[in-house]
Image (cartoon, rainbow, N blue to C red; front, side, top):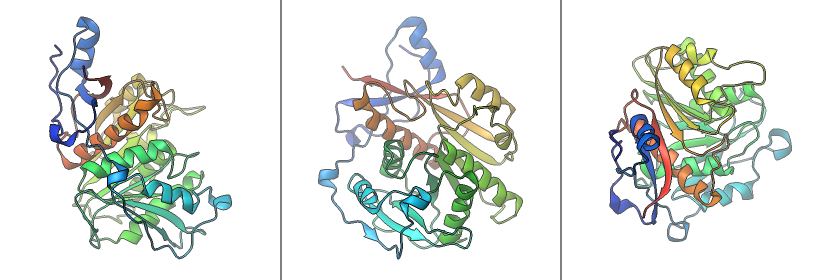
Length: 323
């Protein structure tokens, strides 16, 4: 048996599928290969059944950005997302920072019916070539909303990094300044934009210094075509908490390189490795991609709530069926 201490599990009653995804510590992961032992302490996932959770999408947008101009998802794409999650709304944000409206998608926590004004949100965005309907985005956000008490606002952006950073500022401004803590995140290029936006807020003092800054970085593209994109991570202040979620087959974020950068970082960080996942969070068999993707969102929610500590051993999202 693996000897690593497991992260707290979601109650067994929450699971209604035979397969389960497991969160393991680094020690137990290493023991698997030295002793070929099986592991216990599976993290049970709360499965969302769209057929039993039908709802209507609340469209409050007055105008949606043109897909040709910003590569935004078409309205029917956004509606398709809403049918796959427990409680969601779509709307658009107009900001002087950008020439086009920003299409947003709000994932409301399963236990909540509505979101109060000035409620702290987790602001999240997709990768450079993706959209809000990308499976990796939908799976992560759905899993997060099923577990977290924090609403998630995912926004659509162009492939321009600077514009994406402005998107974070626009969403933050739209939500109001009542929230003490800030949570930014994204996948791939969106993760870079999240770090840059957070850094700018801290530098410009446009944020409550007594609050907490947290960053959820999925598939962070650490290895660029010509250089290592580590400086913005190294510049983060020590009172910032960071969670990396990375696939162990992600060529854009080699684990050994990431560990080297984490050792140099002043900010406190935790790493969740998704076994057999590539940069797009696709795994084999493909039928398991959705479930494992949702589990990464659940792990992120548990980290944000404090159930998983900000610092500590690397955790592994495992992919294995129960016997």
